[in-house]
Amino acid sequence: MIAIIVLAGTATGSVLVRQNSRAESVRPAAVPSTTTVVRDTLVDVVTARGELAYGPELLTESRLSGTVTRLAGVGATVRRGEALFWVDDKPVVLLYGKLPAYRELTVGRSGSQQNGGDGGTPPTGTGAAPGSGTGATPPSGTGATPPAVPATRGADVRQFEQNLQALGYTGFVVDDQFTAQTAGAVRRWQKDLGVEPTGVVELGRVLYSPASVRVAAHKLVAGQVASGPVLSFTGTERLVTAKLPAHHQALAKPKTKVTVALGNGTQAPGVVRSVRTPTEDQDRGGDQGPVVEVVVALADPKAFGGSDDGPATVRFVAEQRKGVLVVPVGALLALTEGGHGLEVIEGGASRIIPVETGLYADGRVEVSGPEVHEGMTVGMAQ
Image (tube, rainbow, N blue to C red):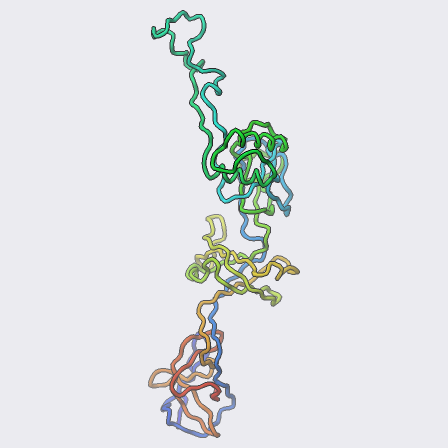
């Protein structure tokens, strides 16, 4: 007779341990519940808690000195050519691009242009003969020729000119060189902005983002000195930002397909947009240890159109087995001689057959072996 020894607990269910469980052992069936071996796809998932909103907030600072006089409203969408905030009542303008502004853009200046002359002629009336060495060098600080400033060249020029063209300004070629023609278009743009038409794009007058932004919060108010973060912003697309334990980071590569679920049971497919490590001043996981911040875009942006911002769960596929034989974990028997088995119910009797186990997922387990087949009736643990 087959004797029950102990009920052993596992991480995904309970496994019944039996003695004398060879395949030829047969006894009258006395199993109150059974299940069927099925062929199915088994998926092991890792879940991460997240938030449905507009993605991570980014901070912007002013590179211009002065006083903040206005800010775009919280929740407002700011598009190319529009102002995020104003310093000394002059706009700081959003343009599109991935390269941040890091220098002024100019057509260039010669030393004589900067000094109002050539800077190399001795002061009139000194009486110094040319080459005498007594008066050929102007007094320090009064006539020294400043260094020339070359025309700006580079990818940042092309990025700015692309924006200028997109805003409707013409008369220049979009390339990597800031020319006199570019400067002319800049003056027209500056007049429209209400700033001094110098033809030079000063550092801090424009800020770049890949697309339009949504103002998330004000960090300063009108009347404060433009120092440090002025405001924070996000993208305009609703996204889920989830915190995934760092040891599962390999599951969240960009373009990975995931499933997003809201608290109300609504589900929708999504795709990983980006992965990053939270900064020092952000939540880095707390009790759950190191985490990575995963930004997920919905495959259909309208999927959660009627849902409020709030908690969400992101499901990542850790492993998937297609077309395998599957039973509930509760049907497994731990054999005293080692390994696992199933109690097969046939013709009013039962017998134990050995099986190999594979993937465990969602309370089910993959099984295989020469004697197990689809449609077989097996017993469940008591």
